[in-house]
Length: 334
Image 1: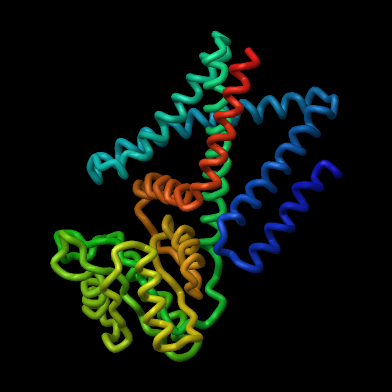
Image 2: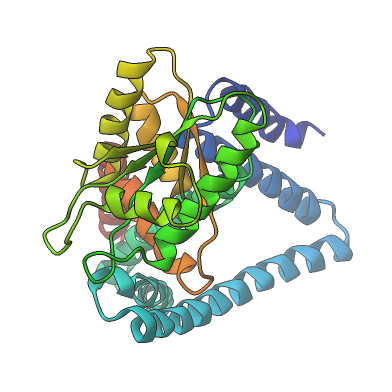
C-alpha cells in the first residue's frame, strides 16, 4: 500500500486546493499527478508481482495505450476535415489537423531515432518525446479538470449573471454559439431568482469592425424578444476580449454593489479558461458553460489549451528549454 502513498498525498493536496479556490490551473496539474502516480504504482505492482497474469495485464495496458494513440490520430483527422467543411480554413479551425500531424510526426521521429540511432536523431527524438509527454500530460489534466469544473453546482446566491459575447453573424445576428450562452444564462437567472431577488443580467460584448452594433445590444434584443424582462438587462458594450468582458463587467458590478457575487456564462469548452481569467482580474464569481456542437468541441478545446499555455508562458518555455537540454545531453552521450 505504500506504493500508493504519493498518489494519496497529492490527491489530498488537490482536494484542499480545490476547496480553497477551484479556479486554478494548478488544480488540474495536481489531479493529473495524483492519477499518474496511482497508475505508475499499479503498473509497478503488476510487473513486480512475479505472476504471468500481472505481466500480461501490464503488456495489455501498454498495447491499449498505443491503440489509443492511433484512435486519437484518426479522430483528430476526421474532426479536422469536418471543421474545415463546416467552418472554413482559418488557422484556428485547423488545430485538430495540426494536432494529428504533430502526433504522427513525433511517433515517426521516435521510431526512426530508435532504429537508426544516429546521435542527431537520438537527441532530437529525446527532446521531442519529452516535450510530447509533457504537453500530453498537461492537456489530459486540463480536459479532465475542465470537465469536473463545468459540473460544479452553483452554490451561492448571486446578484448578477454575466454573459460573455462571442461575435455576431452578418454584423447583427446572434449565432447559435452565442444563442446557447444566452439560453443557459436565462436558465441560471431563473434558478437564482428562485432563491431570492432576481439578479441583473449583464450582456457583455463590444462592437467589432465588421459588426453593425455592439454584441451586447444584439444579445439584449435576443433575450427581450423571447420574453426576458428588459429592466433586468445591463449592457457592457466596450469589450473586445474575454479579459475585457470580465474587467468592464466587474466595474459595472462594483459600482452598483461592492459586495456583489456573480455567475458568468460562456460555452462549456471556454468555461475553465474564463474561470482562470476571472480569478486573475479579481471577479468574484463562478463560471458555468452552455452546450456546444459536438464537432466544434475538440478543435475549440485545443484552442483553449493553447491559450492557457500562453498564459503560463514562462513556466512552459522553461520546460521546453529543459527538454531541449535533455536532447542535447542525449546527443552528446552518443
